[in-house]
Length: 302
Image (cartoon, rainbow, N blue to C red; front, top):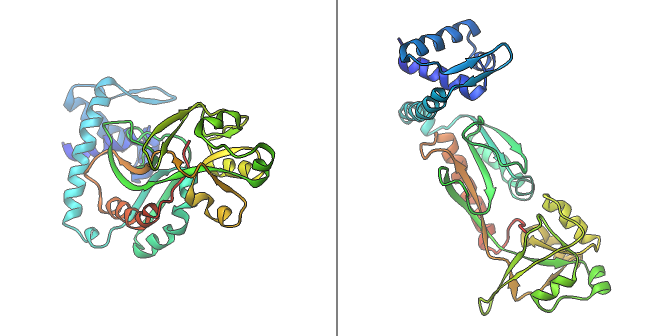
């Protein structure tokens, strides 16, 4: 039996979520693929998939075998890649899950440069606020804002950001400008989620937590910015996101001695054993985003 070959086919079926999708991706007959997986199950003496007419699901043994096999296949693929021209000329498809606002504000200006630099690479971006699952979904990496929560994932910091509090002149004319963090309690605060705002004094390092509240929450930074521009309330945003509005006087910086703690964007992968195409993509992002973060600019959070 071609143990490594059948193992590779098993990983493809598990990743694709079924035999037909895997067969189409591999460009082999569905019957051939089914037979090869059956051979593997007989060799192991265990059933790897529960098959019905409507769906295919991994058994408990299949899930355990899948976790082991993915690493073995990755190592074998990387060993081959390191000896091929792909090291100097990376190629192939990169599937990545990226946040909406981060993509629009930061990546839109540099992705074209990346594709020109590496013409053999193709990008397939899932631009979404959803937290993608690197284990169960066929993606190579995900970019997320904030400290990584899953210790099983490998995180590489792309850039560190700074943010501030802002409001439109019309709003301030009607409601006044807060002079202390606690005065934000009397203001309409536009937020990403119903959670307190933590602020740090940039001179004394004093910290204050404000139970910010208001009439509007949204998981889209661009929409929050537009609401602030309409004079709806106070918003916590990144300097990069509002720099043009600040220069034009459409927004005003509030409480300049207070700011949210710095936060970072991370590239998350399931393993350190990355193919060349993914390595050069992450390295490219770090090089091109670093200067923007060092300038004290970033994407909003709150």
